[in-house]
Image (cartoon, rainbow, N blue to C red):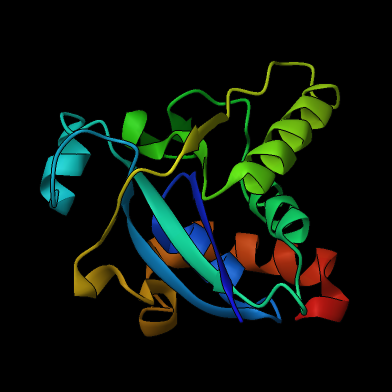
Length: 173
């Protein structure tokens, strides 16, 4: 039995790479969610006109890794106080967002964000919204870090996030 979680915290290449290393994660798919355009393309999402965020959909085994552990991994990989940006990526498509699949995920995500807000000097701007529809990104975005480990962007931005997750979850990688 598996469950699904959906997160957006900057470029989906980075979030996908970090989530993939966790034991219990069965698959991670990069895509788009949280907007108003049906079946958007990467170019459309990057324009900022679709309302979508770059997100990852994580299929996981809850007997191996809990949803709250995925939340922790997600928040370790980005700065939830940056509005509509992460590192060099700027625009609403790079916003911090948790898209929940059920009432329990909503409860856990809202509680996590509230507790996290007390840890930062600046306010946490992470959105917590219901997932209405997930649109998989184009094939060339899938497993991007794995396929392009020497890409400069991946080395500078994705690799450190992978290392943070490996360090934090040493027993779960």
